[in-house]
Image (tube, rainbow, N blue to C red; front, side, top):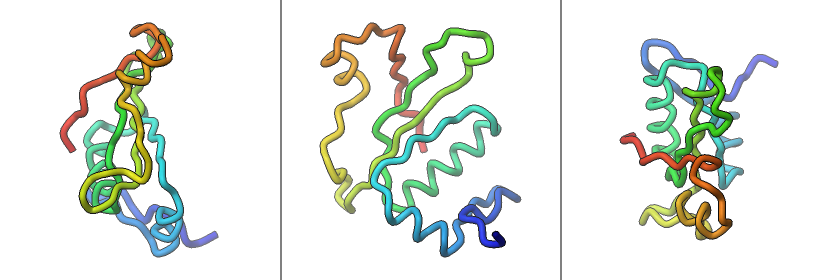
Length: 115
């Protein structure tokens, strides 16, 4: 398969091929595991997702509390309308944790880092 959805992560550029953009247009929620690339690459991905109509709704730290997972974070991105509202109501991480009675150590909500 020659065409890949992600075209490149070089010289600070992250872009989408036509196939990648078509795929992105079909989804309403993206969960991004942020563990392998340098943090600066994730900031670039955040800008790409925002540019293509997504809004970050959660940013959480891993809760395994193991040495290998301490730097692991996840973010959730929902398709947003131009006015910033999402295609459905998504509770904040803190509201979900409270609503479900989850202890803070089991769901570690993070502040939304700037995009």
